[in-house]
Image: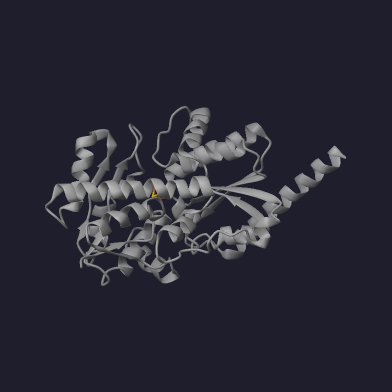
Length: 335
Ligand code: SF4
């Protein structure tokens, strides 16, 4: 059986169930790299120039960890998944960059996903991947349809049942990725609701964010994430704040930020990385909106390779203290 490697980085949290279903329907076995470790980060960083953004360094580390584990590695170039809205340049060149910096990589299965080129080109891009497994276009079509359904089910699990991507992946995969969502004591008695905004490869990679969600839950916070908002709500929020999106995945930052600033969260925390051009613009829009509204405390956290755990904890504790003080003041005024 052909083994397809999928790095647990970058777009993994958005599309893993869809990709897994597609390849399995075509008779392949899917191998996923392990969760990020310091060794992966160090090895990935050693392959690219210093000012490459942290998630791409981590991606390279995951590819390296798959080198002797699979026959192919799947790395699509996702240019656009929404009309006239384009992705960050790092995603556009990802397969070529990987070939250049990791020459020992197994052959890379790549394809261009760009909805602006029309439906026919999109189907052809999917067929290009599928023909490595079968020459029967109908089989590829059936695999594509099953994969799309898996993606819709995955999205619905998150937006309707309030699961994070790792929890939803655990639900749809045989191997649990995260603790199943059961109302823990801390969640049940949660008094503070904190919304996290940012890309999934930052919010759910526990190595680079120093287990941020876990720390919030330990502090008895209820954690909300961008995936818990429906696509329609995110689009409405983007329309309110900026008119129309300029970047793919802007909904994870601007859409979720605007939505949670206006929907009663006690605080909003934006997570981004050093060296990210798109996020520095998008996060600034959310910060300005938070200042304009003046109702919901907002903090942005910039992660990089050398971000110390103690620094993250200190900022988080200070932010939560501020929210508690604000709540106590409100109660005092009401009384
Ligand atoms: S959006 Fe930012 S963090 Fe993500 S790949 Fe592009 S530069 Fe890196």
